[in-house]
Image (cartoon, rainbow, N blue to C red; front, side, top):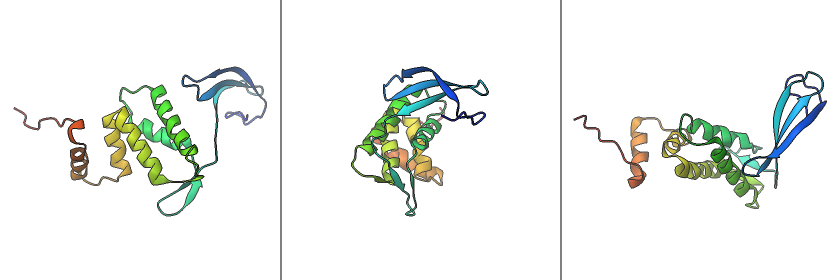
Length: 159
């Protein structure tokens, strides 16, 4: 493992333990050259996935994109990071076990939307606003209106 600070390949594992959901191994490492400590994660990968974007462009699947997107949508919300990681792991497992090596980006977006709908409704609406490219307030109103009874809209009458 290359040190992220000095790029030396001389690093040692100081501690290894499974993550809470047992989906990965967390390793604390120390660089023999500069002494810096850093953490790596080792995960099982069932198959190499390729994402097919809307314009037909193909790129390697990146788990961190899902994680970043969900963390942005859930920023300042009361959702534990471990819970988010478990959801991300579930989405990745579902994609890897689908039997397909190429996955449409739309499918990934819908899986994230479904997961956020159960995790946090505010995060769900935040993600939807970017994923569905809301342009105006009416886009939010239409989306929230379609959610039906799941979200209570605050009374706009100030009295």
